[in-house]
Image (cartoon, rainbow, N blue to C red):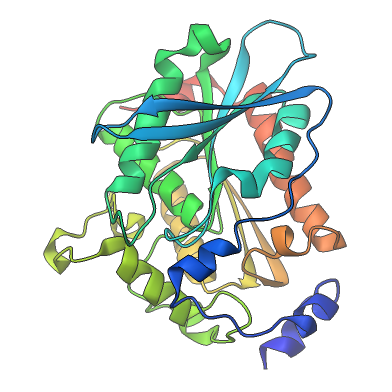
Length: 318
């Protein structure tokens, strides 16, 4: 049983969980309406609207340190999770503020369009538009366009992986560093971990299959490419330096391991952490647990280190 393998720090929380149902997308999105997180006294949070590729507005939620020095800051484009079908920037208000304070950067979180109303490539197009807007407005935003990173969890991690491929192949904005955390990047549901994790109390292979169906919509099999499903990519060269992690009770464990291996084989600098006994999204679901604090601190530190230390020669999108 999965419960026997759950990390001790997470076991009490896990035992209180009830079975979930993602068939009702609107009900699922209702869970995004959470109690507001306090805003740190040194941080300003604002919303800005930009025009998307399909003549619609994209909301950007921006987090800036109002007490820091006025020089150019690194910037993080954050992409929220939610299986491509739910989620919004506000669910990561606490984490985005932490990035600002500890990685000394400006954060822009994109409210991309959600499936099934807006299937692929809507979400990816919105993320690319946001990335391009950030670099085009670097002077106004007081950011360093050579130090723009992208990061996200779950489906947000999948969009990070896809966005890196897209920016490389379009010869678009330079991405200094990518952090696709436990990314949702393979629609085939064929790995051992995707089939092993079936407990309806946590994200599992059944949920993954339904979410991918919503995201890909009526796209014919032959039209599904690596920008929709990043694990289909055959060329991983010239992608940004990468940090990623996953729990060993996450249905995305095997696809994440394969992704890390392919990046490494392609010569991409990559750091990877595997957390034993941890299920999908554990660090956001149980933030007070010691293992959750460890995982979050490690990826916040990875971003801070990237901004300080990664050579610009790694950033080229050739």
